[in-house]
Image (cartoon, rainbow, N blue to C red; front, side, top):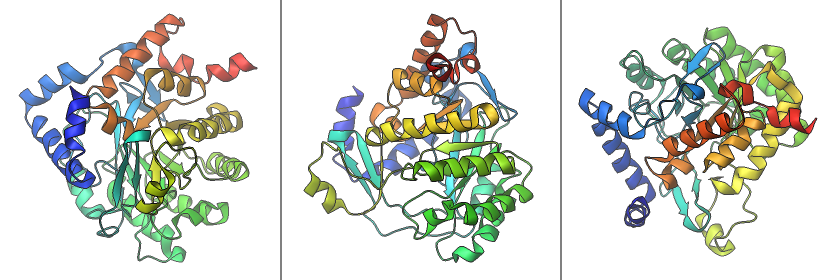
Length: 359
């Protein structure tokens, strides 16, 4: 039924459908009866899925990646939809409109998306106001923060700290996003010399765990350097990976892809590189950092592969778009079956087990 609905929805522009779908999600979960019914349908409530990471209890490992709920308008909606946590944002210190539309594109042949949204959001103050009203007892919520476009690179640390100051006290953790391809010069901040003062500024501002989100397009040497810096500074973890600027290996004709223009590619085409980065990170830092794997996860089998490769937590966005409202439940139920079939009594016991087996 969802496959048929997806075909109908795909007749409308992607950003229009996003707003309609998000509106329906917020409406369905606005009141207690709706949240209860939604939870009964979509939540895989299984204790074997629960895990503790950087001092926070997560009821299940799959979370909603940043990008869907940019202003924390639906912070109370994602738990009833089956997610174990969610990241709001990306939020910038100053409100900004993002890039001109059209800026979101579908590649159905690849079950992928291309976006060049450009951190469109209403600013950290408004996101903080929304977070201040979230209900107690919900799933963990992370705040993903980025650089305001008009701010010069030299002032990036202060800009990130400004967002962190507003959102840190209201979020369970903060993710520093230096890896979107849609803000000019942003990815340059992944260089260790630029990244160190930026991360330190955020660490000095908040008392909650701080993570950094990196791009799949980094060289292996740069991945190692970021991992070493994260350990040195005492970060809680790394989110790997963001979207890619690469366009190779797609089923969609190359001329059709080129016509869409620049932007970050997400979904199955980034899966292999995302898994490579995860394995490299785990081999480098082991359990010194929490690794959150995102990029191309569509099935429970793929989710299980990421857990064995060293991911404590998982994220998805494009998989949710193509997989529908039951997507998180399917993955969580499949993971629970995998865990028990392999003799694990908790998800944490399986994290990185693939490395141990290879060794």
